Image 1 (cartoon, rainbow, N blue to C red):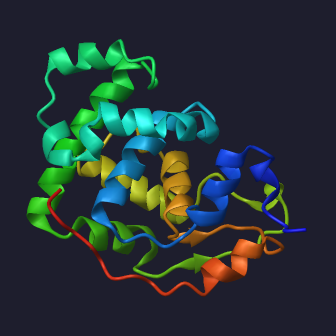
Image 2 (spheres, one colour; image 1 turned 45 degrees about the horizontal axis):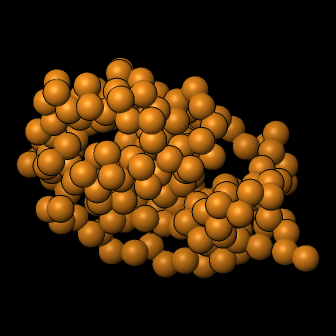
Length: 199
């Protein structure tokens, strides 16, 4: 029987996400931007709630194209407030638009992929060896730093707990339990090259 992290449970969607995405080192600009928006949407909610709405989010937010999202207007905000497929929280919707604008401003200055990885983990993957759910922190000094720098760059809904979840999801931190079959697999993943591209 395949042993997984205890938090996965039996939901097929969650199992697939855990087995194929969570913790895999990601250096793709589009995926990282999507991650920032979705982790912000998750604040105060469970991740499975957002995961079930991810396709609706992709449709509602123009495939997470930051150039298109950055141009959303108050009319778009009202449209999204009526979209039952996403979390209808005005502050989170407006923050997604603001975060697209902040992403574009960051991209004008430097490679956002390199910047995120350097700010968060000095460009290297942190591999932890947790045995149980209680061993896993909700934030770290690294997520504190990433949160602080993202806020300084104009991003919102990027508190330290949200940032740590983002770091776990995008493979900056390997927090699969040591007993999980993915711990070793993810740990052997080479750090992919940065893929920063205009969507």
